[in-house]
Length: 275
Image (tube, rainbow, N blue to C red; front, side):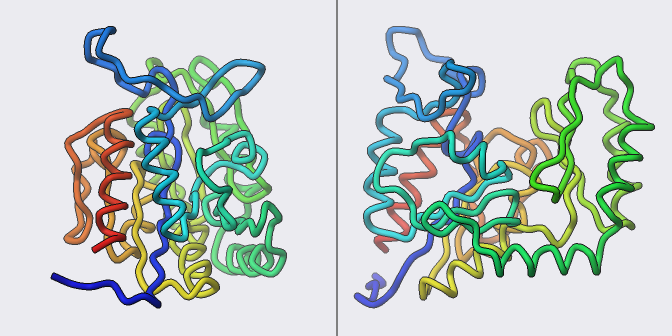
């Protein structure tokens, strides 16, 4: 049995939405009502509860954050991330805007942001070109909103039931040679510069904290690079990666879905960090 050195530092970089936290709909509470787990609300938006963890998951996260460098790693903007109040100690580091911002004690690191912007400018078509294409090809019949996040990437909010599947594939094919990645997550279609990655930001935080091992979890295409870059990873039984059958040798594909998957991911993080 391996023994962890007292000087070793484990960094846990985890996606949030539909990985650790869930909307009421995405919790997938399929059990009888009387057997449903108690829930902790971790986000309020528009004066209404929006995101939840199970109470058991909250306890597991508190334990994890006390024994590792826990880094929330999200595609959310800084404003959207700061609505979330996770249980346990407040993380010193957080990764927002898909790696565009590294927050240190809640403040964006200026030097990191400048490095990201320079690489995007050198390798990718400008955001204005991407937005213009989205505006001319999206159908008002299914388009609800068009948004820009942190002046880094764009996303659409759509009526999923009316969205033609081929449109997303055509958008991805158009965007790829221009240095952009497309991801469909629930009702949102993201167009993100390829160099804007969670993995690059995770490596930077690992360097700053002296982490000797990295663990990661995520459910979407935008989490694939993070999972590949970590020493060990987990993905839930739902989400874009599960739908595509995505796998990697060091990434465990869990069977659990919804809130149960969030709990299981946290159990796996704790077990791996103690090994």
